[in-house]
Image (cartoon, rainbow, N blue to C red; front, side, top):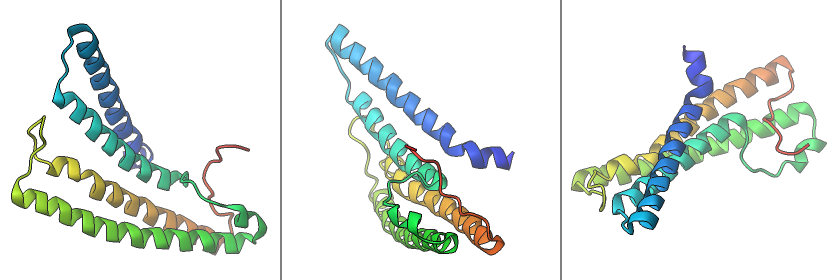
Length: 168
């Protein structure tokens, strides 16, 4: 069960938010074009679904090493140095993600303290602001997994996982 969740948790969440975004947008287009009426809540649902989609997608990309990167140097170094470079990159990103979780959690705490709500949905902004620390927390989890995998590969002398390639 945990293995299935580890492989598919982000996919399921991405599917949920993408479906919510598409369905709400389609309903709002029909309402605007057919009934000449639109709602403010529809725009907010789409906006916040897109924000969650982006942050969860970023964590998923960390897992698959699918972020845009300049990897020309990796073609000219030994497999051992390549693994060390990937580990260094993951450590730097881990530090950035930890700082981002701290500062974004502070924003969430401030919103919680003052009880701010969204304009259209009248829902606490905490739910929407949580996308950033949640996304970075997922990134931290995936970076730790990546570091463990890379260190094991380095110790065992195996080729480091480089992720899928967009173009061959």
